[in-house]
Length: 288
Image 1 (tube, rainbow, N blue to C red):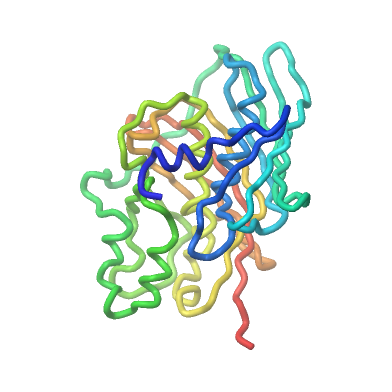
Image 2: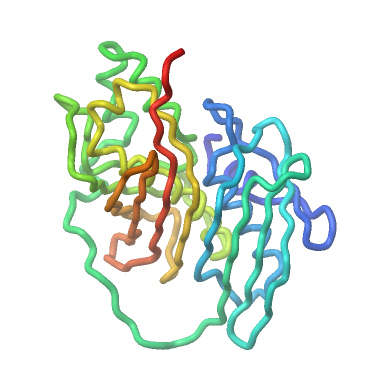
């Protein structure tokens, strides 16, 4: 998946019946459906059932089963409530009749109110940073297996430029914080609804792995299994997915084979456009 057009096509679902939509899959190198894809497609399904003047302000999803990349996913949307200001939908994603993901999403009319936000982190700007592929290029010959693990993670429709290069020099434990700039590689004119869906897709990258940063030296020597358990996303302000966005993440806790991470997403003008939280499975795979 090389272009934003292909990503939009992936997220866009086919209507099968009233409240039922069908989606295809990005064929991931690791063989399971990527969680961000289900987040984006699930939000797309919900958006098809709400009035055009209402926009997503929050979504909360649970990943129940690993999805099979070789089978289509059916999204069933339940109309929970249509209120004067808010619209609520429940989405269940299924394969072979079994739920693999469920989500609640809330939509709101445009309304004015109090305004405040936290400050954007003071970090290097994307114009002076290399993309994530280039940052690990030096590992291709000296640690080819690690290089492969680090470069099969995502398709090329979205470009990522990490502020911290954890793989330069000695790989060691760090504090559980990271900052990554990202945007679509292509310029695009998309509806706000579709930009929400692409942001939901993109927000699943670089989040759970923040919980592994304090254990990076061990994690990169071991066979570590990562899987999202739940994911919440709040939309605060409008944005453009083809402009640079800063994903500032931290991980307050890890334990019980689970890692918990949070994220704030800012645009280059310093506006806080979204907030994210996720818990996921981080488990060392034992050799048999």
